[in-house]
Amino acid sequence: MSISLRPFLKMGRKIGQTLLAQDCLLCQAASGEQLLCEACARELPFTASACPRCAAPGAGMTECGACIADPPHYDASRAAFIYAYPVDALIQSLKYGGQLALAGLFAHELYRRIGDSGSLDLIVPLPLHPTRLAERGFNQAAEIAKILSRLSGIAMDTRLARRVRNTAAQTALPWRERATNMRRAFACDGDVSGLNIAVVDDVMTTGATLDEFARTLKKSGAARVENWVVARTARDV
Ligand SMILES: [Zn+2]
Ligand SMILES: [Zn+2]
Image (cartoon, rainbow, N blue to C red; front, side, top):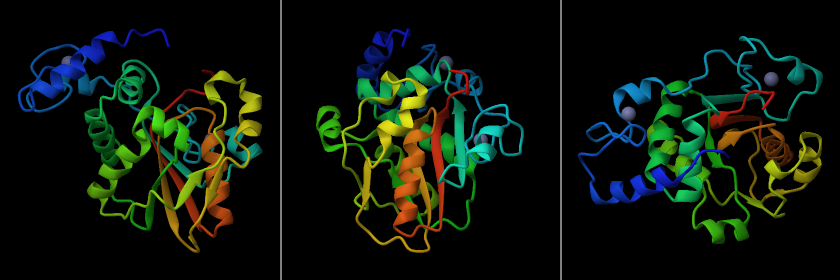
């Protein structure tokens, strides 16, 4: 990550001090009660067209070649943004800078794009391994999911599934090793027979983690698994 997070961390402290009137996280212009000013919010890298199955940007409205050749276990994916500046820096700021207010911004943007999803029964945040959770103090996916659950009125379950293997960070591995790294990383303790589940996560890269999680949920009976992610990387990143 080449972007310096220092300005974001500094701004994080500032947010704690001023709850109502505040400055835009990105350009420091007055932004009222919002984290970003209107101009910056408008310029965030939204996804125009994407594969409905894996949310890879630029694939048009039909399933991309990769999904047709090797169908993932999940049925659909929705992303609010393309993983590019400044969304990448904002996500890093949420995860490693503890800027939890960003979970609200991401949830609202995601919900605005998902709209009324109709037939979903349950929202499940991608579980973090207990060791990782203890280090970070929170699961960013759960923070976003909590607000999505409130906005959509769909119940959330954070205890349904667990991460049982503290896998190597996916980003440290070549793409072809990511699926192997994730194998049997999750366990689902509940019966989700016939349920339509939305899985919430911050970033979707190869989709290997979400694929393995969807496989776990389907093994426990889930009828349909859909991913709701804040940002999706372009395929060649
Ligand atoms: Zn701004
Ligand atoms: Zn696809």
